[in-house]
Amino acid sequence: MIIVLGAGLAGLAAAHSFTRAGRQTVVVEKGATVGGLSRTILHNGYRFDLGGHRFLTHDESIEALVRDLLGADLLQVPRKSQIYLRGRYVDYPLRPVNAIAGLGASMALKILSDLGREKIRGGWSRRPPVSLADWVNARFGRTLFELYFREYTEKVWGLPCDRVSMEWIARRIDGLSLMKALAHALCKLSGRNLHTLTDGFLYPRLGIGQIADRLCERIAEKNPVWTGTEVAKLCHGDDRIDAVLLQSHEGAPRELAADHFVSSLPVTTLIDRLHPRAPAPVRAAAARLAYRSLITVTVMVGRERITDVSWMYLPEKKIPFGRIHEPTNWSRAMAPAGSTHLVAEYFCTRGDPVWGSSDEELVEGTVGQLSQLGFFARREVTDAHVLRVASAYPVFEVGYADHLKVITDYLNRFENLQLVGRTGAFGYLNMDHALASGIRGAERILRRTGTPVLRPVPSSTRAVTLPEGRHA
Ligand SMILES: Cc1cc2nc3c(=O)[nH]c(=O)nc-3n(C[C@H](O)[C@H](O)[C@H](O)COP(=O)(O)OP(=O)(O)OC[C@H]3O[C@@H](n4cnc5c(N)ncnc54)[C@H](O)[C@@H]3O)c2cc1C
Image (cartoon, rainbow, N blue to C red; front, side):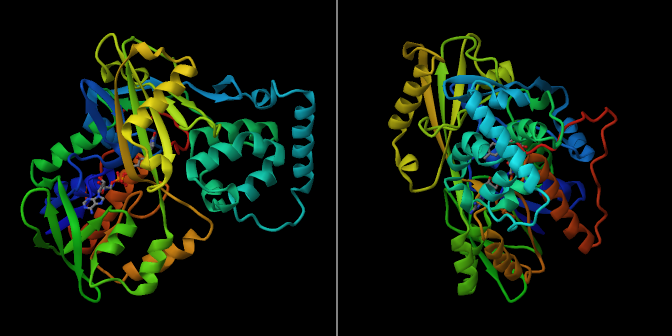
């Protein structure tokens, strides 16, 4: 018997592999539905993701799995994005000249002289970069860093750029689409080359949550998926997890034993729920890891269409949210005919003033800001919805890797526990990586137990040529 903790894409992909291999599995999920961060909310006929989720992958077997799950419900969607900066809407992808156009001759000169200086300094030895600020400054110069990178990065992470680990930016320069856009344009400007950009992505007709829903249907043909069931404790011995204590919304807690466990719970939650408790240094390390939270405010409008973009980025700090999208530009089935909606993403931290704002304040602020920017008139608004997501982004603060190592070194002693997924493995994973991580975790257990591993067959349809997708 195998227990999978968490029914986001990583947990579901693991459970799907076990089910295909004929293994008895139980999935436990504290939410009311499956999908985790990749779920789609249905509210009064309107559908929306937790921030628009596009599907892109380089991995043919993952693409084949998603095509197989979705069939004709998988749409190819054109991508068009914009950045709202200093009163102007700048088209994405940026052309190099966009990055400095409109800034005036003296600013353009400053940027070019910065870039020249950094190019000349390029060969010289200097202090190795530690933070995002070091890394971007060294490549693009101070002026461009201040203009394009600082505000948005600080908005997303809630940290000054010299506290955001350079490991994140170096590995994931394309981690946020905006960062990718800017890096792409600026790299060209500075004579470097990044990955090519794509003009489209895959998206399920009824929202990204359809991937999780279809996985769940396949698992449920043979094995149970218990939603509304929280992992309250993981009971363990010296080197094995023995059982979990489950608390469902109705009913008394119950203990469930298993031979193997796959966890996609936030790794800090996992440490917190261990029984007996983890040693003090491990708990201290977990307390130093943080997740950035997200609030989405969705505003429904009695009009067919508002924008023609997939995403719009709003880096300036004076605008309280960082990104908006219009789900009907991804699939018309996301809203009733004759109406549409805009989803605004607020990056925040549990306990901060934004997180603590009431729903009414958030809706009022969002409607006010969006109408001020000219997207709609207040009288057109028909409804609104607020959603809080506590653990949306693992925070890669300088030094995080040392804390994570203390935790993983300790958890490695549990021979029957696999950590998978974005919050579970504390990695900047997108959906394709989350699916792959769940499958890999399951395969490690299947191999260990001598069960034949069935891999998804690569699609016969040509894989779409896509860039390295790091879009969250
Ligand atoms: C705003 C935003 C936009 C994004 N956009 C994209 C995109 O465009 N493209 C892309 O590929 N990726 C995108 N991503 C990333 C994508 O959402 C993740 O990679 C993926 O959903 C991670 O899946 P997971 O299963 O690893 O984690 P999760 O989805 O976090 O799953 C973990 C599950 O564990 C459950 N859980 C937690 N604690 C307990 C407990 N105690 N007991 C039981 N269950 C518990 C949670 O409820 C959750 O369902 C985006 C992410 C965000 C936040």
